[in-house]
Image (cartoon, rainbow, N blue to C red; front, side):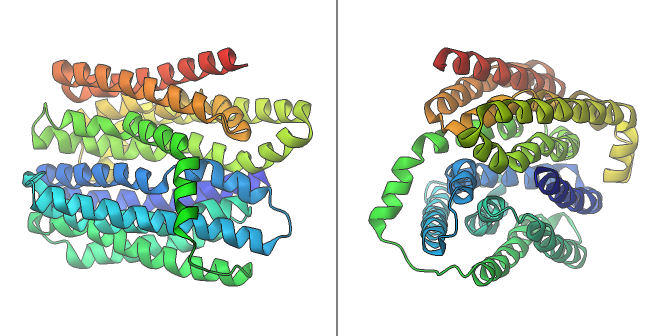
Length: 404
């Protein structure tokens, strides 16, 4: 089942990569380097808020759902509590963002892009990944993703004609995702006979309190992975920001490989951890070795092919983007180093260890990325992100050993 899950997650990412290659080339040519950079900057900010919407439920939600056996009522209750909590958070955060823009005047340079990106935030609230992961039916995710990405691609081709249309890019992305996620949720409820009921506010508050440390760790993790672009925007021109974003777009699609492996094996690893510790250890070691080999090979291939990858993505050779991509190609390998630690933390729900490690890593990342971006621009940021992944693994390893 873990191999099947990884296949479907990889297929899902393959769809994302294909669409990203086509869309990135279209946007880079039609919007120009500066507007393309601002679109990605707005997307990064909304993704940060999206992590707050998820509130760490993607970390422990699948495990708890997987351990519920033949109890439709219990499954319905868990799913309803998490979904409603996410919807409430998305509405609150959207309101705060609107206040920041229209009352306090923040993000003036690209405020329209950011406001219309709220659809991405709302789509995160409806994203049923934790349900499908907990039920071991990730194949449905690929089918829904094909619909969403196809609609997104078609809309981009029709709507985006010039730099003036930059504000619609993230809006289109989020709108397609909202429609796809809502239809998928309706199907899930019908297929598994789940019953939707509005939950008591006290249950929402309990979920918020229970997952607070997971929430803190996901915020820190997102800052470590995606915060660099926001830092870089303070030290380079919009054109250089756009060229860096071009390389980062490719590298961070690859960065999902370790995430997929974690998501693929978490349910089975959780069951083994509760039943047979020896089998759990052997299973984790095998998956870890295979993951390291896969991500290393991926890194080597993209180092060699970087100029042509950028040529395919942007429609032209961009030496700066190619050089940055060569540095970022090993982000998946360095990210894979910490997968074993993450599985051990998640199956045991060691929230304290995860939160501490994530925030130490995030703080370190902010410091070294600021220094790297200030002195060396995009090159400095790329090297800082590699160092961050390595430091992340070392910190998690140390705190886990100290805990045990």
